Length: 402
Image (cartoon, rainbow, N blue to C red):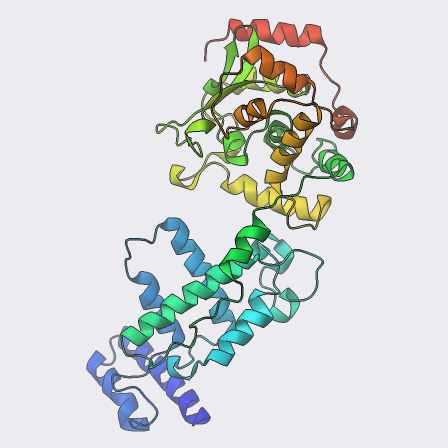
């Protein structure tokens, strides 16, 4: 049976090639395998491989499938077709095979493994080694299992197979994922020192200002990754005589906010100004503050490229702890404010989690109280600008037309 199926697969591929070259009629292709191998080993309407049905499934339009979910589905099927031979008869795939795929591959490969050059093109035996890196999260593993479940359920629906081998494949209870993944750990003092030492112009290859300032804006101003990455020059404004950052949605530029309370205007932390942020803004011209992060398609958001590169940087130079990522910087920010007995309402307003009426002056006073216990200027090797230099930049800002 095994050899027969193998030969049938090869025969089917050769027939498809001939059909594509218009050297054989499609109806002949449908009948030929049955004529040679009989009904015992092939479906009534011909042999159907895993790759063939995955292709049909991916090409079928579905109202709930957008560009992002399509990319996730493709990633899941790419892994499956790397594990199970693409030409495999769909009918011989069993539950134990998919369980092995889940247990030996999905639960062992590194998270975002495609972002690491050394893993591109690597075999599964190399991917699943203990690299000291976080693996795919329980949420991701469950989601991939759900994708496989939906695919094989569709194959049952269309009579390609009798039973769904991916049914109940999810290994983690959904309630445990919510509890475990909702917690983000703040960075330790040592990790913050490591981060900004390696983010310095002297240490980071191909350094660009956004590689430093996006994390700085999260740590000292409480910005989310998406908020910092999508900043436009016009979002840097003067509130009285204080330079401020304006977070708001803009359909024209593709800028979005997480929720209504995320729309806010906050003073720029003095440390950010001392690092030369305002000087960069004055020289930026107009449009996106970080042109390198401008998306090819605004629907994909400005943070996509930065997020991938930061995750790689974070795991390589800062920490292997999965619960410490870019969002942890905002956790550090909130914790630093609480240590100075900052009112919770002020913290919620600064981080865009709740609306409030705290004045810019009071927000700036709270920001000035932040102390992480390390010298960011020593770590980055950047000489802090003097108050006189910053005052001159603010004066230039008054006269600058954006």
